[in-house]
Image (cartoon, rainbow over all chains, first blue to last red; front, side, top):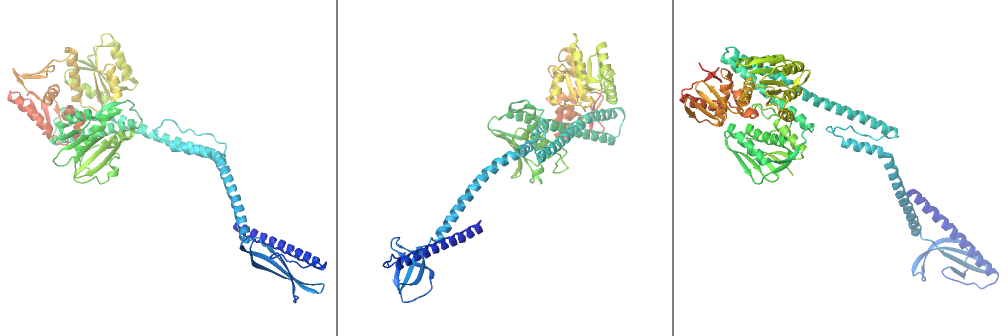
Length: 393
Length: 225
């Protein structure tokens, strides 16, 4: 672009120069012929000057700067001085003409170029935009579908049909991929549900058989202890099963009975229950009655899990503090140090230490419930307290 | 009492039958839907213990069949592997008297059976008698001989559980689960049960009723030597 403008600049200047020179020669020739015809020499400075001269030199062609009073500035002129002997008098004929200034040429070139470039750019931009948006429409449709793709929705992805081969291939592959992912996910979910369900009956058989053994035959104390320990483990597996089934159900959106629930009264009920089995005090600070729209059963589970988690992990003396305001519920219990992997605390089966016998599902379930209703459940450790905070707004 | 146990798992069915027979009941068993349906239509039972997932059909249909009959005196206890609230509510809505989730303790099943029988026979409360101990389940009053003894709610529940499951070894776990349900897994220290049992034992012993015995060091048995 710039090269062509430079070339154009020199080419134009050259043409103009040649044109001016031609004009100068022709003017000089006309003056000559008028002198030959015997007319008096005349001058019209700075354009034409005729003077007698005793020199006889060849024609001189040069650039010169002369003050032009009409323009009130110094202008560049092209000057032709020719020496001629006419009627035995030596004349020096000087003819000048204004040269178009090179800056002006340059400016004209640049401006016209810029105009062309801008026009072309604008036209191309809109042309491309319209063209591309038409061409890529199927692609962006597909992209939108992929973005909205969620495992939990029951509908398969609906991809528009495209007659562009690449896009229709892409769509086919995306469809195959998402169908497979959904299939696998559903299988996995079904599997979890089935396993949890199918385990209950064998567990029930184990349970009743152990009870029969305990009651039927005289046992040693040691045998009895072992049998009751098996009972405890059965109980744990049962709890785990219940937890897993519940998680699957929440994932399946099987709780679709949202209504106004008073968390305050649920927590009060929980505290009354827990007071009997928890020796230390539970402090309940209730600023406002907290009303939340959610499934009642899930609200109970959420409160129960948070409070029982606090009871399980409470260390040392002091109270467990439960606080309810208009917008949040917080449960605090004493602890020695912050949880090591706080980011994993809501994962299934995450256990900070093995000594506490829990299913490792309580907090995962609480988190799942909060996620489902877009509540924010966070964990922090402050001043020796583990704090679980649910923000409802 | 005549009890039908409709459960397709043979060993579970047998264990329940043996346990309940030891408690002085007459038990019949049904191993699939057709057998259960047939027996229910032919004979009268005081209680049907019904598994919801029978091999060849749903226990729910048996329940409907039972409740359709005009003189529907038969009580139903559902035992199900499914612990979902919906199923439970559905079962109870259709007229089931109780709902137990697998796995359960036989002692727990037995105490539910007894509670239903009390309700069924006497339209609510009745007096449970064990030697000189009388438990009025209507007014929740316990008398030993002629003397009324004051018990806390948990002690009362505990005594009723003991008397219902007399002569059986009851571990602390079973007692905890009976008294506190699912929350019992929060109790990591069963000394706590010991405190409750001990208080009850003291109150009974004071009136000369020494029936709570320790079994195998850590379990309990309510027995008249």
